Length: 171
Image (cartoon, rainbow, N blue to C red; front, side, top):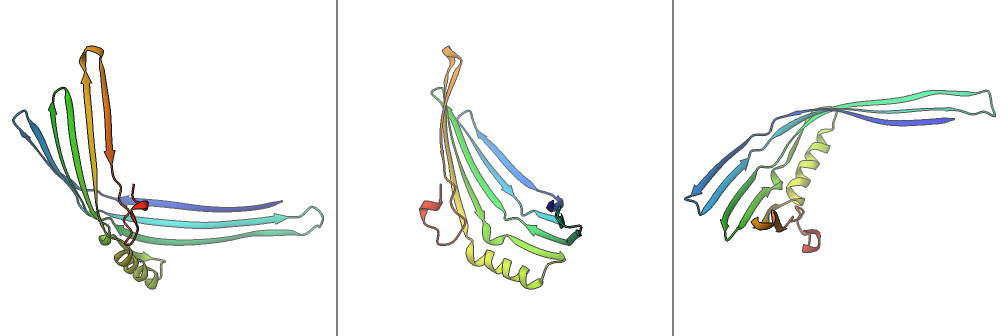
């Protein structure tokens, strides 16, 4: 009989702050601006490996082996700016959103248990490997009141955050 377990236990705390503004121009159009501020999350992580073995052909039993590592770190998410506009004309809702995210501002900070070189290398890689991106969401919703139906169609982009990625990696 052989047993090998790996377990990760996370305790995560953090707060996300958003601020937004919505403006309606008469009954023609609505405009919105939303800013998601950088948020810091703190993670306490306990990683445990446990193994034991017993062989039926010999009287020897191998006693359990256990490894436990504890680390605590925090990471700060990038800020995000979202602009949106919509209008309702000819029984159709037209909407567009533009999202800007600067992934180079992502940071990790060591609280305990991680090597400073790992933290420094990680933050350097984030700065060197990631970039800012702009994504678009476009949508239409046509109301067929006589039938109680709404027809929807939309298009969105998700640009790769990695420097040097060609457009094949963006969706």
